[in-house]
Image (cartoon, rainbow, N blue to C red; front, side, top):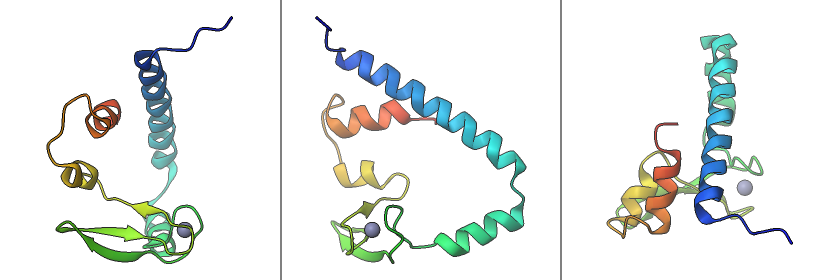
Length: 104
Ligand SMILES: [Zn+2]
């Protein structure tokens, strides 16, 4: 019988995977020049990361979130998840999630 991984094990492996992806991203970024980054930003600015459709800015709870009306994705800028969640128990979803990927 296979034992189900504990929550801490899941978080450990999720963080390890995220750190590996971050290292690959940083390595790839060394080879990208500024012109290429500017072109990519212009091509993808306010486009849905899932389907490529235009994102719309929606005011919500004093913040602005980016929403795709084609596929339903909601995109949050850095720090918006924490700001929207406000204060919650440190072991709540947002606290655990942001702590897991903090510094990456
Ligand atoms: Zn979409």
